[in-house]
Image 1 (cartoon, rainbow, N blue to C red):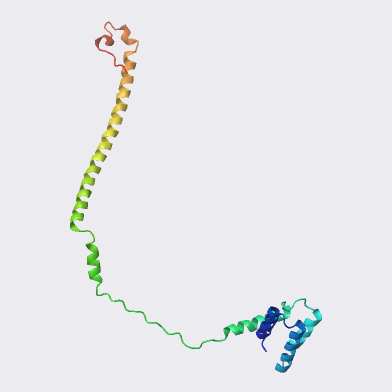
Image 2: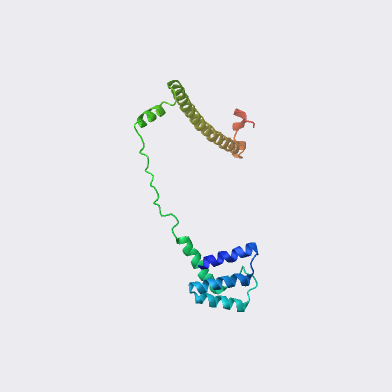
Amino acid sequence: MSALECLSMLSQVDRKSLVSKSEVESIVEQEALQGGDYERLADRELREKEGLSSPRLIHPNDVLKILEAFVMGLKKPKDVRPVPRVKKDVRDNSRDSEYWASLAMVIPASKQSLWDALYKALEKYYLVLTQRAKLLMENDSLEQQNAEMQSLLQQYLQAKVNAELQIPPTQGFRLPTK
């Protein structure tokens, strides 16, 4: 009897609670003696001496054996049949050129001409807006120059030299008011 079977028998006993721990151990001992596994019998006797409190616990010495038996049980091939290979379908590309040609004509000619006219009109509008932006920048610079010239004119007109003249320049023209 393998360690995996012993483990499953212990878990069945835990689930059903029909057989006591000592009965399970005696069954395992009998199986071990029949199979000639004296080492397992010695482990069982050692377990009895230590007196584990629950049948669900596994003795630390048995953990590796039980895990090895479990893994070996998983490694056994269950189905030896070969996996059938599915051949890939060969793609039929005979109608590809038709598809791409039809995709090129998604937008009808009337809509295409409308979009072309709109594009040309937007290009002209963009040119007008860029020219307007240049004119606005030029206008700002001219306003700045005008303000500088007005301040210089005010300085010249208010100079003391003008009062000493026989005909002051302020009599010849009017001062700009802000």
